[in-house]
Length: 119
Image (spheres, rainbow, N blue to C red):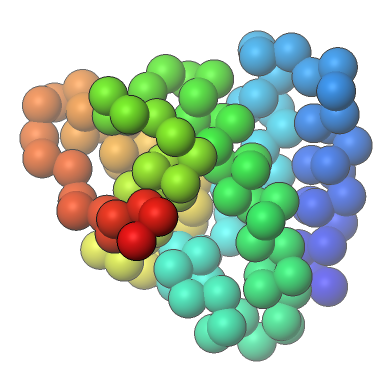
């Protein structure tokens, strides 16, 4: 139940009237550890498994509002890229992993290899 309040706040903030500028404020899942994002079943509370659709949507909305990480910014591709970064840094939080991806793009470094979407 630890992340359930974040889900309620996220869902309320991302209603149909959400403006692009408020995506940063509504991204309530940024404190989730990467190890749970990359492997939701490892969460001892069991909340992450139930919240993954909302988390994926929140991550995609947040990234699209900040600017593309790749040339093909589908929701699946964004979440696969974040998951790949989380597998590299399992002790980091979800927000930190996304910020690290943007830092890599800005520095021109290679992004991690995500799994293929739709495969």
